[in-house]
Image (tube, rainbow, N blue to C red):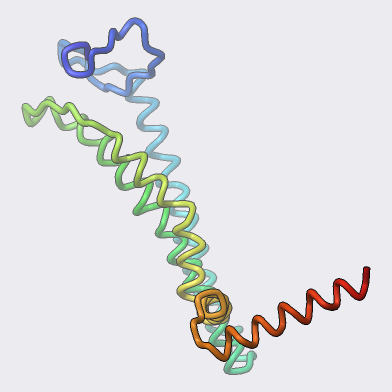
Length: 179
């Protein structure tokens, strides 16, 4: 650690997730911890899949009762939910999973890993806006509102600007009258 990063190990707070001791024997506490973590991650994904399929098949039956426009909107909500479920998988679980699982095979494949993981923080940072952006792009009603807001804000048409100036003057005049 000192050779690569210039850090003294005894001075660092750490939790070492290494399943193998220097003599290639298993560290059983770490194996149990790792197995438990993998179990809970897969358990959560099993629940997500079960609920997703159940909701999909129930929606097929229930959507027959809705109007065409409402049916379209409900399908968009469902697609947005699916994409929002994939977000944590792609932006959190897969990158971290690669870093956690790769060292498990290192002793068997005679590989040595020394990864800089700063890039991982950048990927994790993409997750919060991902949900909102995905929802806005998939659901047409939200997309229309955002599009109209952006058009209003960045509109350059002279008539629009003149109307906006007139509106602003009128509002300012109203405020003066109210005072």
